[in-house]
Amino acid sequence: MTTIANNTAPAAPAHTAGTNQSTAGRTAGRYLVRIILAIFFAFPLVFMFVSSFKPDDQIFADLSSLKAFLPVGDISLDNYTGVFDTVPAGRFLINSVLITAVTVLLGLLVNSMAAFALSRMRWRGKTVVLAAIIATLVVPFETFALPMIWWVNKLPWIVIQDFIPLYSVGWLDTYRVQIIPFIANAFAIYLFYSYFQSIPKDLDEAARVDGAGWFRIYRSVIMPLAGPASATVAILTFLPAWNSYLWPLMVVQTENLRPAMVGLSYFQQLNVLWGQIMAYSTLITIPVLAFFLVFQRAFVSSIASAGVKG
Amino acid sequence: MSVTTPGQTTKRTTRAADAHAPTLKKTERREAVTGALMVTPSVILLIVFFFIPVALAFVLAFTNARLISPSIQFVGLDNFTRLFQDPLFWRSLRNTLYFAVVVVPLQSALALLLALLVNVRIRGTNFFRTLYFVPVVTSIVVVSILWQFMYQPDGLINNVLQSVSFNVIQGADWLNNPGTAMPAIIFMSIWQAVGFHMVIWLSGLQTIAPELYEAADIDGAGPWEKFRYVTWPGLRNTRTFILVTISIAALSLFAQVNIMTNGGPLDATTTVVFQAVRIGYQQQQTAYASAISLVFFLLVLTVSLVQRYLTREKG
Figure: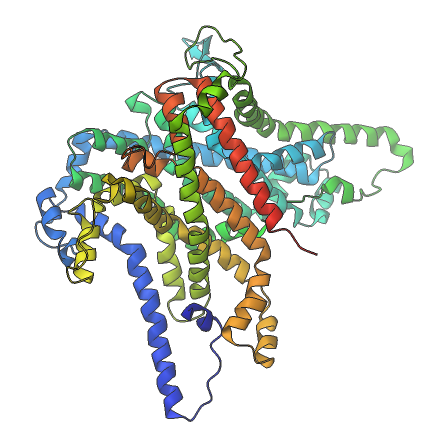
C-alpha cells in the first residue's frame, strides 16, 4: 500500500515543520521497505557464498547466529579444491561453456538470417512460415520433451572415421543433442524480425542499387545495425542454455559430456558435503552472475522487451 | 500476437522498367531462392525439433512405444484409460493446480508491488532493482538445493524464524511434512521468479504517459484513485502476458520437486510434469508419458485460452 503512495507522492506544502518531518519519515520508510526486501532476496545467496568458504561443522554451528552470513572463523578454499576431487568440475564447466557458446552463436546466425529473409525478401510461402514460427511460441518444451527423447534416439548422423563417412543412428549421449535442438528459436526469430522491421528499407534498397547481393546486405548493412537485437537474443538464449538441467539429465549418461548443472546431482547421491555443494553452486552461478552484472542494462531491458508484445 | 507480413506492405521500387522484364524475372527468382535458402536452416531445425516431436506426442500417446522398443503397435485409448484410473495421476494434477492457483495470483501481485517500488526514482533504485532480480538469473537447480538445505529442521529458515520471533515460532520439518512441503516449494519458487515478472510489469508501467498522472493530480485524485483509474487500465496488455507466462511456468513445475522432495512426502508434491518424466524417462514408457504430455498440453492450452478470453478487451 505504501508502494502506491510512493508512486506519486503528492507535493507537500512547504514551510510547515510538521510536513518536513513527515517527508523525512516517508523517505526513511521508503528505504526501510526496500532494504528489507533487498535482504529477503539476497540472504540465501549471501549464505551460499559465505558458507562455501567454511568447513561443514562450522556451517552448521553458525546457523543459529548472524555468523551464517559473515565470512568469519575457519575460512579457506578447501571446499573449492575438494569440489574438483569429488566431481570432474572442470570438465562439467568446460562442457557448459562449449554448449552455451555454440548454442548462442549458432542461434544468433541462424535466427537472424531467417528473420532477415522474413522481414526483407519476397519469396513463396513466407506468410505460412511466419505464422508457423509464431505458433511454436505457445507450446512449452515440457509437453514434447519425452516424445523428443524417443525421436532423437532414432535420428541419423554421419561420423567421419579415418576419412570415411559412416552412417550412425541415435543422438543420445552426445554434445549435439544438447546443442542442435535449441539453435532455432522462434522467440529469437521474432525479436530479430521486429527489430529488422524498424530499420528503414531505403538502406538495403540503396545497397541493392550499388549491386550488393542479399547475403551482403544481411552481413554488411542490416546486422551491423542490429546490435541491440543481437544482445537481447544472446542474453535470452544464454540463460536457458547455461541453466538447462532436465534435458541433459535425461539424454546424457556419459559423465564426460555432462554440463555443470547436472553435476549438482552428483552431490546429492554421495555423502552430502554441504560446504562443497555451496562451493560448486557458487562456481556455476558466478559466470551467469558476472554476465548479468556486466550486461545488467541490456539484461533487464531485453526481458522487458519480451514482455511488451504480450 | 499479430504480425504483418512486410511483403504485403512494402512497395517495390520500379527499378527495372518493362523493357528489362527478363532481368526483373531473374532478380526476382534469385530473391526467392536466396530468401528460401536463408530461412531453411531455421525451418528444418524447427520441423525436426519442434513440429515432429509435438506431432509424435499425439501419435505415440495411442501406441505402446517404449524408449528402446523393437516394435510399436497402436493400442487406441488404452494409455488414457490407464491414466484416468491412476490415482497418482489425479494426485499430481491436483498438486499442480494447487501450486498454480496459489502462485499465479500471489506472484503477479508481489511482482506488481515490487515494480511499483522500483519505478519510483529515488537514489539507489537501480541497485534495488538489480538485487531483486538476482535470484532470477540463478539457476533453479542451485536455488532448489540451497533452499533444501535451508529448510532442514535445524536449518537456516527455522533459526531465522526463531530469532525474529524471540523463540515463539519453532518451525517445522518443512519438506518432510505432507502439509508443509508444497507451501515451502511455493514460497521458494516465488522468491526465485518474482523478479522476472517485476521487470515485465516495470516495462508496462513505463509505457503509461506521465501526463495521465499529472491530469489525475489536477483532478485531485489520491494514490488509490490514480492506481485504480490510471495505472491499472494502462497495464492491460502486460497483465495478460504476465498471467499467461506465470501460469505456463507454474503448470510446468518440475525442477524444484525433482530436487527437493522427489514427489514426496506421501506424493504431496508430485506434479504432472514430474510424473511424465518419471514414467517416460525412468520407467522408459514413452507412450504412457506421451499421453500425460498430451493431457498436460491440453491443460496449458485451456488455461491460456480461458485467461485470454477473461482478460480480453471488453466492449
